[in-house]
Image (spheres, rainbow, N blue to C red):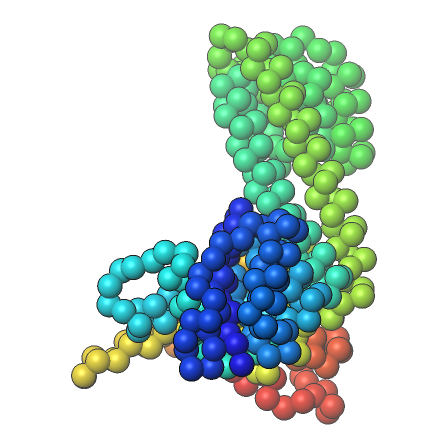
Length: 403
């Protein structure tokens, strides 16, 4: 049996091959992250009679740069294991107390780790799950972009019309944006006919607001303390920023439509039956989990999310209970957010959170407990492919909720 360790990078990778006794059969060599480089890599293996059926390949999960090589090797019959960098770092510390790290050393170290530890063959997610994960992550990025754009708009509004923020419950609602696109300064609003303002606000709010709100805004504009210095230039900038906000919101809406379609053909559709979990949260959670059957118990899923408790013991000192945060940050974030909404929407999770706080736990600690319990419920629903019920049905497979 041969063990191939590959140190992954953006433009090129470094590989080394060991035999079953740990002898280096092929010293570390570099190959480019291109089709030509991949073919050169295979040729090196063939030259040494390292065949796909008698070797294992290990590579670090470095960003997304491993995916193309993984796909190429899998298509050529090689069994590949994607290794968490945390494991290689820990193995490096065991191997040597010296802080020595080069690509060549890492390639040999990965091969050595692969030889000592029997890593299971990694599998790529099926296409709907992979698309779900990618789009859900991109949606999170767009939400952050939306917040950044709003902050830019607020910085301008605070200069030219500081009173505007108090005129709407959401100063970036449809009516507010429609008005600001037409009249962004207090002076322009103050001299505009009340009927024109009413029409803009009524159309922007789809009939929910009207003349009363228009009169309120006009009155505020007349007594505004907004600075007049470069006000027109700032108003022009504000219009551009708001157009950008509309564009980002439109993209989010388009993604939400696609995410809903993808959820319908994955195990994630059952998460929508949990009170407090919407399309965005269900997509983010399901996309990060992928195939729920790869997690035998909730403990595995909780550890994958980095929500397992750390434990440090030395002599009489015993420290237990801190979240490890060594796992998928996206899944951990989604579970914590879902825990908050579920605790508010569903008595099962709400009572659990209240009981934890009644025991003297901080709110965040209680919420972490809800998130871990929720992880068990999610795993159960996805594995058993059934909707959420506060009490598990008779066909429920025991053990899913025991973390």
